[in-house]
Length: 292
Image (tube, rainbow, N blue to C red; front, side):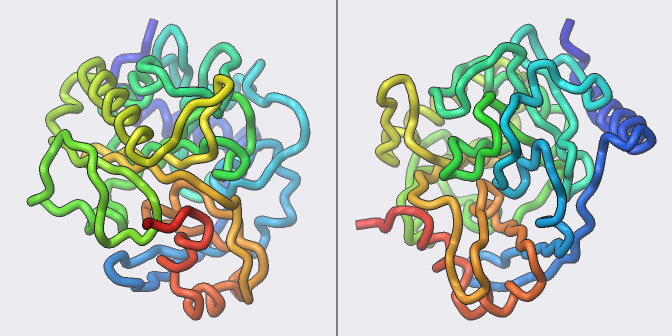
């Protein structure tokens, strides 16, 4: 039986408290800086202790963990709620943001296979209850640390990338943004779409498939090429990926879907100067495909 929609937010808080006491939840302490690279005012967070963790599952960085599947079976102390007959909601073991959760299939499904309506229903149920950003790292080159299909949700109501989606932008139509120099596809929609999770799921699934077609993300052999997906209550963005990390003066910096929402996690504070010098929009362009 799925958990009632209105109950997810307190359940995330309760599960987090239990997991902290048990020592299973290990938040990553970070500091935050805003770097304005117009038109997006990026948030850059750094965590110098990040590289020293022997993380079994670190989805927020895109760092690969050791072999094995942490979701079959999942650790009961990380359980938050039943979302549907096909998906459960779990805590992210090493969150950078409080309330970071994982939307995981009960049975094994490939992270790189085409998303289904059931995936978007589980995501929609989460976003209906908890305002935030949902995202998926489609494969290792897109920041995925596990092959078992999982989306993620961080309870951030406002994102730097929101500025790209003007109120004058038509709703319900897949398009491209002139401000982004790399291949992508996106859509804006009315927040009222999330009044009903089933309606939202059907609309999101249709828009996602259209966005994949526009961005030339085509299924081959049952799998999609590397891509990132970001979904909020207001917009959807799909970006095909070429590389998993940026290589520059600050060293190697893995980047996942949240980078395209305007939130970047740096492993070392010393990388900040290199990021500023490179330009954050150029950094994203370096790991994607140029628009022709």
